[in-house]
Image (tube, rainbow, N blue to C red; front, side, top):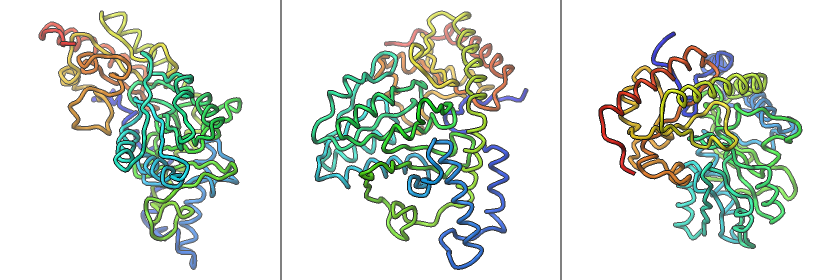
Length: 397
């Protein structure tokens, strides 16, 4: 077993070999621009992009015949969320200026909402319960005649807690409100079951990112429902008219080709990966609970991603604990908030104190994770917590 053991798969994943093989030709001999419609180099690149679009559509449960109209490729989830939020609020500004979201959303959503507030939008930030769940009744009460859009993430990036998206989407639809879900952490980790009618069908707008499911960085997607009337969005980036006019600019053919291959692989392995990683996660958490006192798994009472553990270790500062865990690659929070000194807004919204939030580490498993690595991580974590508790005073609340 090699160290350090990587347990930060919610931050990013290694590119799958199948995706790497798909990428390589488009970095070399097949270098054409997919918008070059007059010759074979462009046709080959366009074919690669459209194959990827169909493969991503299949992973999202979108009819492949609708892929060209339903899916717009972006540089990642952050751009896709900005396009969805800003684009919808601008396109429907005559209806109103109200937007509803949740306090535990990713910073890509929260910071964009604050940007919109500075430009006149009225944003409601709904609270969650101690398990990180948004109450559907509270969500329904927040919607008004002037609500344009509601945005609730499918799975939280820090705790793995799943929101009741189907119920929330139905409530929004009944109220005539567009519903956006950030599915960045869910896509590629949760099985898509026919009975659930897939994630995308339960939202008017949905966002995903390739590097969360073993594809290349720099590739994301925005799903837009084809239900009538069609969802309208104002573009963020003008010039060229690519992606149905939603995003100007030359498409990143190599990254998108890799995204497609990663999506096809994820669809094949969804159920198998989810079940195996759930067992490993449960073994890891059981070991910590058995060996340590004052340990809490955040969101343990809710439905969660199968491979995510957010663990609070009473009496220990997470950054000090992380320094003891040199043989592990783990996280004190979202990788997209690097450098931030404030305690996790997600954990605080769930009722944790500043001290408790600062005593929390996130462990996220992935497809390459082995039982040996999980056992090693659990033992090292127990040793590190015991060492820190013996060498520092309790963390102030």
